[in-house]
Length: 113
Image 1 (cartoon, one colour):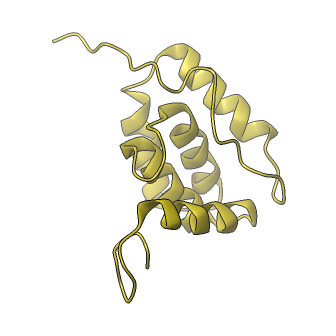
Image 2: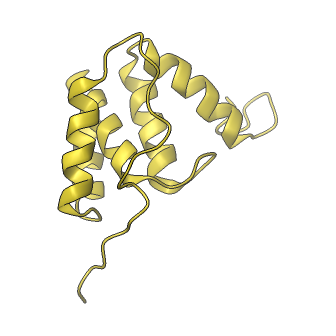
């Protein structure tokens, strides 16, 4: 509701707060939505590494949109970002706080034209 302003004032930071709570309970839709927020820098600093990790988790939870988004964001990432995102996803467990930062997330790969 906060992400789109449905019944409340639109507030990306508040949306992130609620997506994070649901993510930490293992909700694949919330993991996908939080990944989108990190990919776009909405309510959080843009971080492709965390977005990628969240898309991995959401895809494992059978969120088909996450599979496509994981591929899209991977094209914008360095190999180090992909490796860290995979490590975050493989070590994170339901009930644990999901990281709010990464070592490699802010470095955006230069794409050759």
